Structure formats: structure tokens, C-alpha cells
Image (cartoon, rainbow, N blue to C red):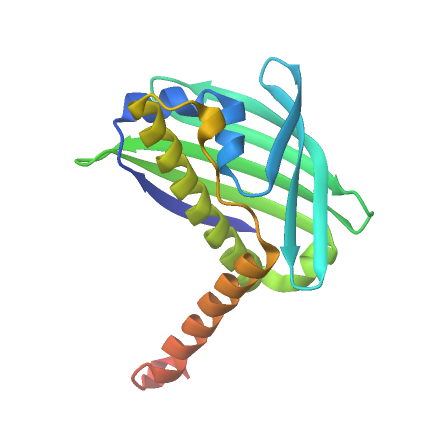
Length: 193
């Protein structure tokens, strides 16, 4: 399934591009993600953990930066992992593009997510909502890190938002309820029947 996000960062494009080139710093912004080994140039091993209601999953795997284009400010990443309890697998193709804006930089993120096992049972809507919540937290963490760097604060002193399963699940459920509410209270349109 393909999911698109657009993130606004209040920093110039060159600053954001330099930050995005530091993979461990970027990974530290994603709730629940940890890099624990550099396997080679642009190859990393790590894990991503997330709790969705009663299902707690930790995917261990690898991420490869398959393309980096400084002129067009784009990065392509292929990642895959298996749940440590054998409950499923995940594959991710990620395309990141930076675009300058009047106030800073817009990150255009396109994810191609393929899930199997327990993670796949949630369906497109819930997975999209959880992805949206995680990307918002990622954007907040990235902005906080970039602002701190600008003030001369060490990255070790910056605490990122964590991947609270309850928090992510509640925010995703709220997004789903709002989506249903908009449909329910929308003016009647006979062409939608």
C-alpha cells in the first residue's frame, strides 16, 4: 500500500538536506526506531518497535539507501524486517524529496508498505492513520533536533518523542473516528450512493 505524507520544517533546504544525510540522526527522530549497526556504506541494521492495542511488534531488519541525489534533493530507501516473535514481516520502499518553501523546507514522503502476519490484520485505514501519527512525531522530533543544533545543543541532550503504543493507537483511533464523522455529517450527495 502506498501512503504519502507532506512535512513542513522551519529550516532552509540545505540544512535539512545535510541533516537527512546523517542516517543515525534521522533514525533517532522516528518513534520506536533504533540503528545498532552500520553494515557498509548506506546500509544499516536496526529495529522498529510499535504497539497497536494488544499487538506489540518489534521488527528487526535492514535499511539500504539505494539512491541519493543531492542536486534534486531526493533519497530512496529500501527496508525490510521480521517481527522478533515471528508474527509477520514488513517491507518498505521510501522515497523522500525535499522542496524549498518560503518559510523553510517541505519533505514529501512516499511510503510503499507491504505487511504480512499480525500487522496486516489492521487494514489500510488503521495502518495509514498510525503512519500519519508516526510521521507527525517524526516531524516534531526533526524540528526539535534542528532547532537544538542551531542553538549549539548536543544531540545527546535532545529527547525524542517515544513510540507509546497507547498514544499512537489512541491518536490513530481518533483520526479514524473523525474520518467516519466527516462522512456521516457530510451534506447528502445523491451521486455518492
